[in-house]
Length: 305
Image (cartoon, rainbow, N blue to C red; front, side):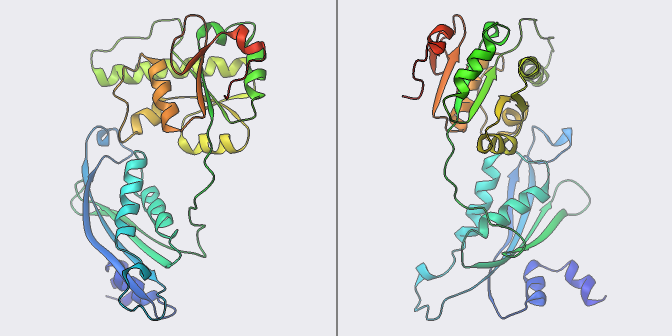
């Protein structure tokens, strides 16, 4: 077996040593097994499987450690990076998880290069996995950014279909903060399914259908489904209409709410995105957040107080 083939299947620590272009110390996490829900196939939803992490971090250590634990990179940096990304949202791909774990580890200025191997242990006759290598020249490490706090507005169907919609959007947009619109299902009853999981998806899709109806009435409104899309939209002045299926179904600690209660889902969503304020616009709406009459909104009443 050639050295290249041997190293391809070797532990990341051996690959790290073979690829070293300068002497570096290494810290590692071996055979760290977690039970998680992950995978792109429908059979992988609603169930957990074992995945195994092997991670090696090449570090730059200062001179003269003096046995000072505060001067070295902690092993906890690795396990906390895994915990953070597993708890953030449900993922389909090991590649995505590996990339995100590597980026979090590289936030630490002492980390020079990281080797991440993640394997599924229950999906085949052997371990199925991915391994990546990232260093500071290959990725821009995730950095702490100024938090963005959107205005989340739940619109009743009377507002979505009303003649004042353009004026309502003008007024909300004038607040000068990221704007995310949420809606409930349309006035047509959704189909009914015998299985609760199927009904949950149907109810969420009914909300999404109404989101597209709203977006069709004003070109400023863009239907978005993922955290990545929402983060981009909030930073670039786009009005988003939340399509809830992906974020709700992929949440690792999802809402224990009826999917027919769109107002409650909006309240949960607003907490997830640390909204500056949540308001409800429409006849008879009492939740989520602060109910505001359309006439009051259009009169110029301050919202973010």
